[in-house]
Length: 207
Length: 131
Image 1: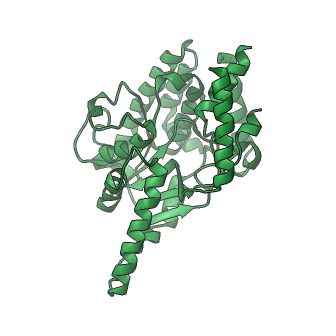
Image 2: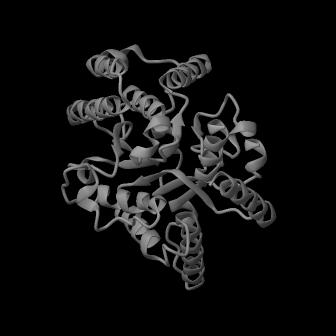
């Protein structure tokens, strides 16, 4: 399984590396050099859970850096964007490679990044809907944007301009993709999502 | 268990094949602005109908339809504020999500990938691997 994960990560980076639009900014890389070093060290850990905990620590480190960054360089052109996701521990094996890539995307673009799970959302246990986990994204974002300070969201309600929700099986392929560009295309928007599509027969692919 | 999952997969394939329906958005990824309107919209989405009867995407459709009708009535009465389409932007299926199935529709220009893993299919693959 670990070998498979490494292959998936390698293929994803290969795919990103060959994209025409991918031009990593050296300035951004040097600004966040310490975070990149912490991020890379996570890969040396052996167990899935220790890697996951390591990525959580890196996301907190990133948050501290961004808090200082936005104090000096905040303006209309660099909106404060947070990326949020939720996973249950039973899917950690296939979600972890995606978490690694998405965290790299957040570091590269100076976005806040937070992964929620059953453990760090305990304070909201009464408010969430455990009948259907898919529903909780709606409540979680509302809670994140509320002005009340919380253990998990800290002061996101005060310092974040936009939150992007991503499911646990969602991966950014283009590490240079700028969410600000999309947001600025629709200055009056408060909610943006891609259209749904007709679901094709999935079972034939499986068989 | 494996036989049951196999049969359930077929059942699902038939139901999706003949329904041909779609929801307005794929909620696997979306962006919300930290604004009063944005937060109220989330509250309405959560509370609008019945979370045990409808999926989040289905309830989004119901709410969108309700707000759209509400807007038509307001426009008829002469109130021309920012339109719902400007506040709630529905992008191309592959702009910040994946147009399913990724296996056949994903292209090199797509910037994101949403695998949309189905629990039953995952179980079925697990069964196949166990033999």
